[in-house]
Amino acid sequence: MTIIAAVPYPTPAAPLDVAAVQAEPVPGDVAGNAHTAARLVGRAAGAGARLVVLPELFLPAYHPPTLAADPAGTDVVADDGGEVADARLDPLRAAARSHRAVVVIGAAVRHPDGRRTCSALVADRTGRISAGYAKQQLWGPDENTLFTPGDRGATLVVDGWRLGLGVCYDGCFPEHGRAAAADGAHGYLCPSGYLIGSEHRRDLYYRARALDNTMYVVFANAVGGTAPWRFNGGAAIYDPEGRPVDRAADRGEAVVVGRLDPDDLIRVRDAHRMLVDRRSDQGAVRDLLTG
Image 1 (cartoon, rainbow, N blue to C red):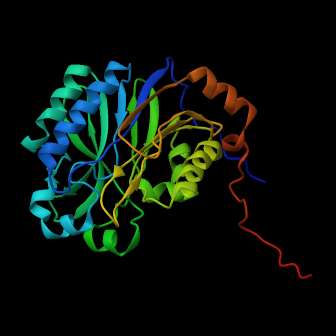
Image 2 (image 1 turned 90 degrees about the vertical axis):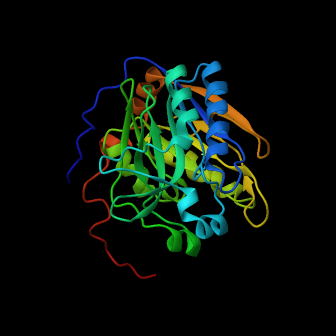
């Protein structure tokens, strides 16, 4: 039996206050949605958050007909280094800079090689915006027609907290959250777009990813919209045992703020040692039994 060594990254030295946002963007209005995002970042920062997560594809809105009809208007362009210089995002840059907050927000990104990805942008505290992570697990025919899947994970480091990035359907795969944890993640950030009718799965997936990997999960979701693209909110922050630190209602704009606590992370990981005790050969060799 082989035991996989504990992740060799130290526990953060101090707590980090984070926000999960739910709001309704306007399809195709990148500039207007950037203004809305800036307002919500200000609201979150006013409540103490230093990291703010907004929903999947928030900048163009998750509306496949609009994304298909106007790719030039709904995409933001990343350069060879991943930086996004689109002037429509200036309000978001200013909000990140003035509030000294890191922002994660969903966008459709056009890359120099022509790929279009469903991505999580990261705005740092200087206001620089980069294409931080491209969704690896695309959901359904619309996303698979519109986008190219990402081919690698990403870990964001904020004040010593290692935070894996995922986008919506990524979080339905235990392997995705586990890959983040194996890279030393203390938390998992998931901009998402869950449709009305998926409430049970929405809540269960992210609570499970938290407990599976004894890490915090920050889940931001769209809300509102018109049929069939109507979203169900429920933005939440889950602790490393999968309990909600705080959670929004299924309707209406909301900003949920909670604290990632290193002492709680240590307590849970000392009690529930799945990351340390997991075997490298788990399930690889199986017996076939008959009854």
